[in-house]
Image 1 (spheres, rainbow, N blue to C red):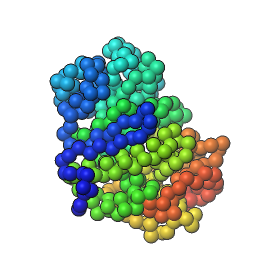
Image 2 (tube, protein in one colour):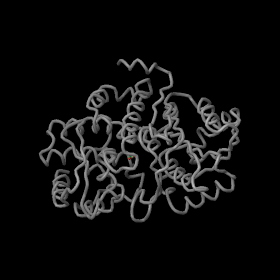
Image 3 (cartoon, rainbow, N blue to C red):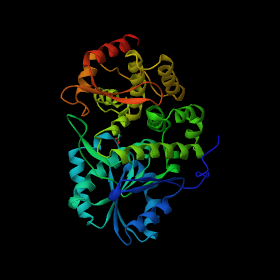
Image 4 (tube, rainbow, N blue to C red):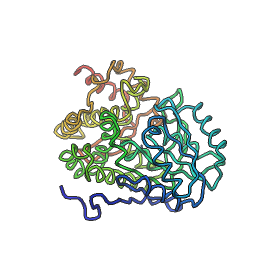
Length: 380
Ligand code: GLY
């Protein structure tokens, strides 16, 4: 495999996110905890930092990062939260804000989110309101958070009404994706994150999808292909976010597969033992392409190719693969209607005219969706 000339194996890749006064860089590479600490120190020389992390990441990586931060002249207070989606709650949000105040984090200080999507979303939201907004650094430790949730400034928590319904746009000041940290992920968690990597090929980059089909095992193995996949994903997301920071237009393309995925997560009670977000996205991507095929938009060949790639990796692509089942078509459609992408009761989907040809389809009839899901359930 040949990598682009500006991606030398082992060298750090820097991807800019161009947002005028809120611009920042994403640094991608292996073993860069001490480089990360230097970057943090450059951002806020002599500042205090709160290192927000979950108990699993803390056990594996926090002491090494803290040593680097101390060496770089940053005084750091660690704040640990329990791992898992349940931490994106009001109660945890309030407790985190109080802990940040107790750590005396001031406007000129920094909050560092060191963990997966839950840590990043919760910490970013707390940073957005603490003292009316403090700077925060994303140090994502899962594939999913490195290629998606750490970039673009979406922060928030869940409500009993649905996922991510309370939050704010608050861009990080810096993102550092140390791809060596992914070595300690479980195979299941790594593969779940891979669904978000494939998504970028399916949205608008068919050559990247072709490349993923050939190189996916090297991405998992952790060679330069992994860094390349993270970089391509971050560049794709950075380009969309630069055009449409607040999802008033084509940022919605990043939700390919997510209307189905959020409904499945809701129906499985956000129970990670049954379905994690990336697995739900994997099924959602396959469904989005089969739904597009049913609507006569996309060839059956492309829909099959998408499922075949997900299957090859060991990701789910069918409703029947949800442990414990999903409920009826009516229940799935009702769960979709809770999604915040619903405007005045009309479903908005991201559909595709082929691999790399996704588009926003507002006003998809609920009956059409229901008929499709009934057919999917019957095929099980
Ligand atoms: N994860 C979708 C977005 O950031 O817009």
